[in-house]
Length: 205
Image (cartoon, rainbow, N blue to C red; front, side, top):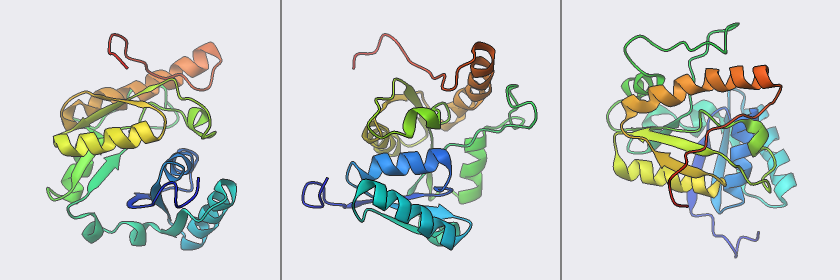
């Protein structure tokens, strides 16, 4: 894809973008016209990861920065924060463990303040499904949040990454997606697979 084919007019900062899922999503978004900033605790590590992605994509689509430079709290003001957090407690990662009386996504909202629109998504998609950007991902992504426009923006991001986004209601409903991940981990172990996912039936494509 050339710059003429897809002007990079939208920007996404992927914090922890040197990890398996973050880098896989970064590739998919870069190939669909998004300018992507890879964030890491180390600026050097982020720059190296960005260079590797650019080489793989044969273009200059991704840059690397330290997490605090990629998205400080001031930079988040007025923007959308997509929370993919799952509260796992090792070694029992196949057992559901949730914050008492609140979701991890709601905790994130409380931390960043009301001027940031937190949307919960991507908890139930294995990086194994995402790592090859040419692979079709037969998996739905639950979207929960308290702002309809923010949820629609995230739905478009999900679609750009090759999946279908399903609006499941307010941010409090993120508890369902957060709790499903340990179940999927258990299913993977039980049935000797690596990438169990969720698909909702009855909704037209």
